[in-house]
Amino acid sequence: MESGCIREEYGDPHMVGHRSSPTQGLYNKCKKYPDLKFHCGTSVDEVRDLSSKPSFTISSRGAEMERVDCDVFLACGGIKSRMREMMLRDWGVDAEVVDSEQAAYRILLTREQMEDDLDFLELIDTSGIGDHRHIIAYPISCKRIYNISTTQPDINPAISPSKTYTTKESETPCSKA
Image (cartoon, rainbow, N blue to C red; front, side, top):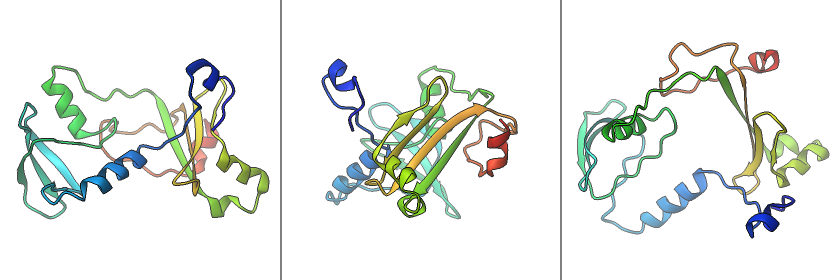
């Protein structure tokens, strides 16, 4: 994706990717090795050891906790990830989530939702970052989905900012901020 001076300044074009793409690629390659075991749809309950031989317990919905010992542990969590918190604590780093008083909104539009408006549909081939505010928009899933992410002052703060869930919201709080 061409983006003005990016190629000139850094020697490569501006590229857009979503974290799900390398994750899916790694997973697909790893499935070829029968000795690898995947624990999808599980939560890490307790980290016992993160040194050369990681050890932890996991649980699935409605299942008993299970101890896992492994050679490599790959966790795919975000800022509210329990694994992130445990790993940073193990390293002596404060991992408490601090409320930024900003609300993040993500809007996902499919190509089908955009195709009736040709001007809007042109966006599926572009990436943009807002001027002097946080908004970033870019295509994902082979340009089948347009991802729009923005932050703005939070007028409806979460009761527990450290919880690992994400809430769904209507456009009303977004339009009032």
